[in-house]
Amino acid sequence: MKYDLIDKQLFIKNRQHFAKAMQPNSLAVFNSNDVYPIGADSTMPFQQNRDIFYLSGVDQEESILVLFPDAPKEKHREILFLTETNDHIAVWEGEKLNKEKAFETSGVKTVYWLKDFKKIFYEIMTQASTVYINTNEHYRANVETETREARFNKWLKEQYPAHSVAKSNPILQRLRSVKHQIELDVMQQACKITEKGFKRVLQFTKPGVWEYEIEAEFMHEFLRNRSRGFAYTPIIASGNNANVLHYVVNNSQCKEGELMLLDVGAEYANYSSDMTRTIPVSGKFSDRQKEVYNAVLRVKKEATKMLVPGALWEPYHEEVGKLMTSELLGLGLLDKADVQNEDKDWPAYKKYFMHGTSHHIGLDTHDYGLLHEPMQANNVFTVEPGIYIPNEGIGIRLEDDVVIQGNGEPVNLMADIPLEVEEIEEWMNK
Image 1 (tube, rainbow, N blue to C red):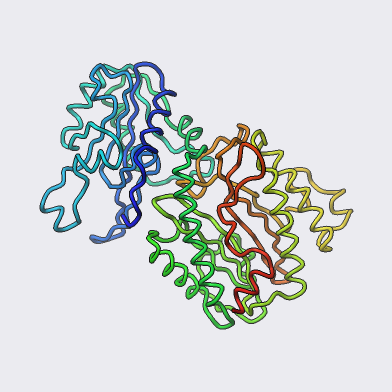
Image 2: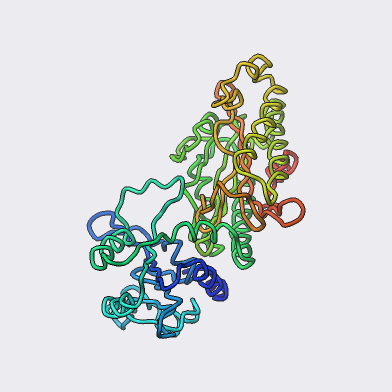
């Protein structure tokens, strides 16, 4: 790993909170992700399952965490199972966690080697009545590949059919959505790295450069600041490419007079940042581009103020829709008849702003969070309104990551990233 070790107190607290939400005499199991093959002997770079990382800080493959708060043996109330490191592994792959480093990372005192898992697991399962299995129930999840976790869950239910089964996910959805200060500090670091990349790109961009060259500038700055790279597949969209919401090929040449939409974010220590800016390729906005840009910016600023404890997800988006409708009327893109005759299930503003305004962010770019529950302090949300006008070659989206506060307006983790028209133009023309 490139990042600095996270304070293990975060993971200790996370396990304590999870244990409090468990049923009596139950245990929970969490598995690392697979290393996924590409072909021949090639594999994709390993990325840890976010749930086991959230509860342990362990960032290596073939790891298992077991939580059993009511275990008769105190040492079995928290257990890590890890691949036993040896000289051969150290030479070919680099040293893995030993028991001492595992404790330093996670705060878990009991560490066994993975080869002993089935024997020890049998012992503790005879003492438990319920087992929590971990599944991905995020509202955007669409998983076709069988994961290591899924294989384990299948094995567990076959081997121990008499145990009651409960779900970890509802607990994790609630816990992970409320960030500890240590998490906020790590996310702030990810946002600072994104800021450095964006400022580099502002001074690099000019007519004639290619979208993939700009992608490379971001990656250069991310890697040199100890990020693994992009938190998600970056969107570098010039001209009308910005009107393709999930444009990721990044293979066009940027032309004079065009706008370029940049939806990028650095990860740091497995935590995501998510920024969108729209900049003029030539370094100066046209009057029309500036008019539309400032309309999006006004919606963004007002939408941010609405993210307060107690706010509800659906009414929030409805209010943002009203703000956008007003701006689109002002831009001449809608008229009063469009609004009066609109379909309530697909309001008139959706023609030009067809996606949501906000989503949870944290260990995942679209992080866990229960959307049917009121917002609360230390939820972290993106705010990302946009206006898309293909027949004018204009696609503008602006996005920051903000932390809901107990009192007052949210704190913007991206407050130092240029956003106003004048700031963008000044940076591009230094």
